[in-house]
Length: 519
Image (tube, rainbow, N blue to C red):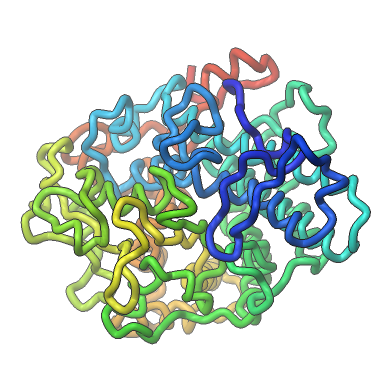
């Protein structure tokens, strides 16, 4: 990796840390006046310290959108964590194309990326930086002599956030450098094979859940991870076990889901503001109020937490052509993201989740560089449930819901399809009912229906590539416009199910081997 600057954990405490939003608002600790053992003496100080781990998912650095990024040599906007996740999980699929000429951005949709791709390197670096920041927090907190229960909670928060980064690593890269808080600082990390990383993630998340140190749904501080987040992540790991290890774990996944379904979460089915549908309220500037369904979200704030990534990227880049930026709650559009016709056709007119702009767009993408080619998204907005706006129109307040209860219900249906003992059919129909669609019978619950329902429910939420791979539709069996760099779409090379280990990291670390199929 390139030189990592201003890593939060390498300071004695939260140096130069800008506040996360809402309940994560904290005052930075001056590292020149204090040492860790002197300042980390109460919950407020610990909040200040761990907010640096959260902030790495929400911004590009600790100095705002226009300040230096945390990783030197990388563009702050394009290298933001969730924006990188979007590049890898959405632009590689039927859900989204980007028409810009920014370096190699089109190569994601064309499925012809290379081992020296800048955007791949940026996301890979962000993942490993998040691991490093969490590791350093865990090193420092072990030195403290505070309330054991409080320290255990903060410790497990950091462990969940580290597991989240490693989950994205196993999903996108498979075999990655691996380090823990017990690793020697400065030592070149060895590469952990995908199967071994899976085993570690399973053991880590099970240990966190069994430790029961994290708060539940109704006790968690807004913006922090709860026990539900740990369970959700473990369920996702089991859901994709066959992809990651070659051995399916549907019954284990169902057991975790049943546990999570007893934790008090529910679908957000009633529009509270009366302006937007209940579904769209999950993606508005005040979606932090939707704690009934959202299990964990990456917080955004148009004043206190600004970046050119996360929902700021999704909303601004989805706006262009003749679209009215005011409808999106923003000042102007960037004219980048649209969907393929294959994706658009998955929605019936009665589907409440069909939140698209079509008026002055054409359905077919004849020219991928022309924004008016392809229908645009209007799912995420910088508007509030009562019809108002976020705090600013230049940066959005809309949180990014990384984990939702609707996904839990759809995972349950998939587990039932594969023979697990769980009532996935009624769970599946809950999701369809909220969308205004008819319930289905058990005989209708096919793999294709579940995959399409996941597309309709979770689009733009960074799960599409993950789903297509698990259902065997990413490489072949289903094509979309401009897949393989031809308009009608074509099958991709089999090794594209993983991204390459960036050349620059392999040159810096002789312990790393390239993923199969890449030179």
